[in-house]
Length: 432
Image (cartoon, rainbow, N blue to C red; front, side, top):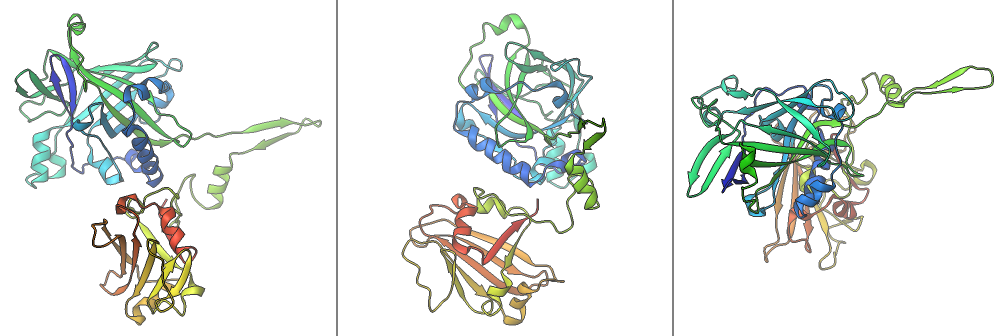
């Protein structure tokens, strides 16, 4: 993470740190549903006035901030000056590869009591060495900074804290670039003395958001508070980050009623009962649990995760070995199909019959592999998404070629658009 400072005001300058190190049990909470919600939050904030979004955000309670291990990670970034970049993590691997961490600890005295914050940032020199395969994972150095105090500000309704752990990366004319990541091992504790990084954090709330997200506004300021009033606030001085602990809000309810006989009837939390009946803990995932994506999810986002395609056995039993055309929730042979110009359609191109029939087996012993190729409209051919199906041994089972003549790009194609083509003849499912 780096900041660009101009005349004592700062502009966030994007830096990504990528290295897979020591994934904690906490990080494993990030599941597919989390990334769907993060993508929705990112899309909602991307083209809006971030200062207005921040002002309207709700305060977070102390108990949510220090929940369990209190570990929060950066999952998205924005700058009010858009050309300086924005990004969000779209997979568990991307989250675990980001080594920066914010750890809130303390005993909450009221809804908004003060807490301690410990920050961790990796040394850039060792990240580079790891990426060049000159050192192992356990040799990547991470700075454990001395805790600072995070205090609730009743005026901004945000938890605020100052991080004095900045490093001067470079200077050019009147601009300075600062980073929270130590550049080298030799400089890992040589913090600059004239500036600090000020943070204000609030809760991201929306009807569709169930996970814990913080929106944090961060600005590099003079360490001397008397100098801050003289600093010029340039456009782009504020950066906004989304932090998350990967946890979904939940509640456990137990209701007790007294009747005329003074007997008590207790209603237990149904999620606990159901989980016990399934032989697992609440929220535990079975070995063969799959779900249907949300209708507004983009196909290319869906297939980044583990997915499968299921063929309706009764319908495909006599058809899977021949070319078939799907359009408007209808399944037709190649000879009888005649999709109208501009209409979305998919073509099933089977592999060898002895292999293709494996797709209809209700109890497949051999796993199936999928590879996806996307093509954007280029004036010569329409937008397409092609899913090739095979086996780990290399056998080709078939390919599903889907064409979207009126879509400008494959990335814009939603899952609902795909289901409008295939209907109930095919089912695309993902792991929860």
